[in-house]
Amino acid sequence: MIGLDAAGKTTILNRLKLGKIEYQIPTIGYNLETIQNKKFEIISWDIGGADKIRILWINYLQKSQGIIYVIDCFDKERMDQAKTELHKMLLELVEQPLLIFANKQDLVKMNPEELVVELAMQNYSKNWHIQPCCSSTGEGLQEGLNWMEEQLQLQLK
Image (cartoon, rainbow, N blue to C red; front, top):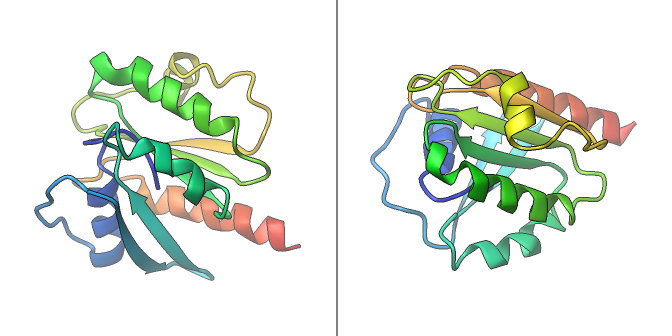
């Protein structure tokens, strides 16, 4: 799970793992958690999004079976930066499914179609999905995780 700092990665991880939000300081390095979903046990690396840590993302991407990219839809000032980092990451993906959590929908409603254009994803032909969500309420998180689980099941066939 990657994304810019303050996008809500750790809050999402806590919501999925614990069912609640715990106060967080910015992640330095990574958090490692195991989440039990319907049929899979998902091992999640919540990797810090600070500028100096982003260069390490590639090390985790290459070993991952699926990628979750978290975007703060409320932070319009950093949307271009989120797009740039996303496209750098896309160059490194081989066959991994990509789930984009469009976070903070409680603060601003940004539908997936708008985000596709904003992130210039319309020409990306690999396996990806945008899931609107709200890390503070948990809305949309399970749907996104279910999508990822379906994609991982398809890879095993």
